[in-house]
Length: 428
Image (tube, rainbow, N blue to C red; front, side):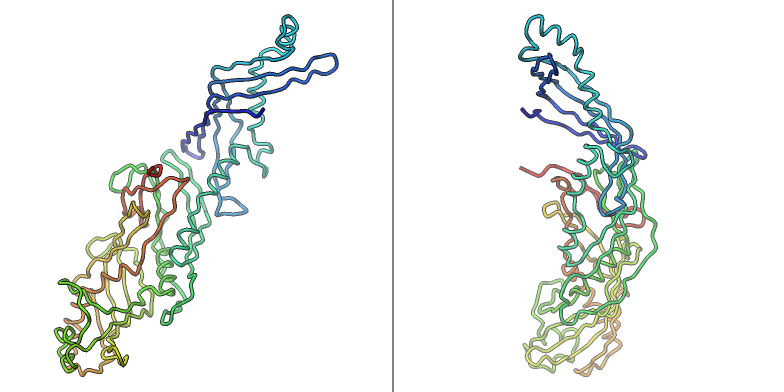
């Protein structure tokens, strides 16, 4: 019959330059058959142990053939030990006198089993392509952790994440990847086709046992300014900020965009018939960028919009009443939603002077153009722009080995924007 066991456990401890992996198998039972040659007899042998411990050290590195995968190699030979080891012979081997003689010839079976299991678990070809069984099992488990696919698909982008390093130390394992985002969509009408994204040279961060805020954590994930700007570029090409507003939320509630409402800020709209309906269309010509600096009020990141074309269009005849080019400097915050397992983006209202508006089309005859550009429009846009955070969507994160993420902190680790979380079994 096949071998059996009641359960097993794996204890992994990251050390400098390797990972110590201890496997414990409980209540193991192995059934064997002794095949005697010549005049010897055949009989059964059953080996049992309360536990078998398999101790090994493993080196992790990017796979040379597929750098999106992790190559796991056993260092040296594994250690094997048993507790409450017993062996039980069956058939002729257990007969009086004959069994005693046969068992005396065979001797203590435990060293034979120990050495056989150690040989089976060893790396068959050292530094060659074949892997030790447990190393191969760890590789298979790690291959089930997919980061690029789920994140890229949910964001409408192709995410490539080849590893350039796997570093083990006493605080944990760091996986470094040269990530890139590329648009993966049918571009909507009006979306720009951009040739490049904004790059910032930043040093890859190092992680310790605590978050920048001083909390312990199970896993940290970070993204560079350049990678985030690649994502913003890809999303802009797929329709990010390409928005039509039919209502305005100006702090006192949400209202339809009527000529009466617009006339409160731009008197020239009073010339339209009361109740004339308008819409506001936003068309990006450049992707928003994060600069690598904190936000204006020390938010996680500074986000800049440039040449966001804004048009006030009359419903019915689609005539452009007023066209404005907008640039703005805002603070970007991120929070982690434990229920959805996603990063949620928030834009903070810009400070005075951080919104610039330039009129590009005037079909209503603006009299005080300077006042409109320097006072009225920046004030209105400061109220409207934070609502654009919803168009950024959410940044979903995958589960890891069927463990869920529980947010600990979102902050900057070095120059990278980072999420720190604990790993927990899914709720029943």
